Image (cartoon, rainbow, N blue to C red; front, side, top):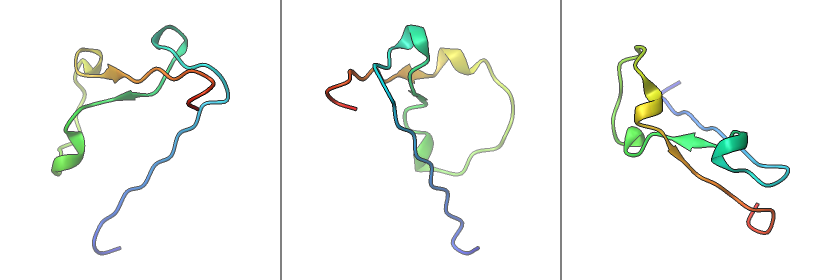
Length: 55
């Protein structure tokens, strides 16, 4: 497929906080092509908590 496109979706069925597994992102990771390798991703991930009103 050209151009190469990746689309993901995620939605919460209830309150989503860091302690129960909210969506985590890597800021700026969408701006370029990345090599796939394992790092300690917990250092770079940013939790995105949502309450029921905003989800």
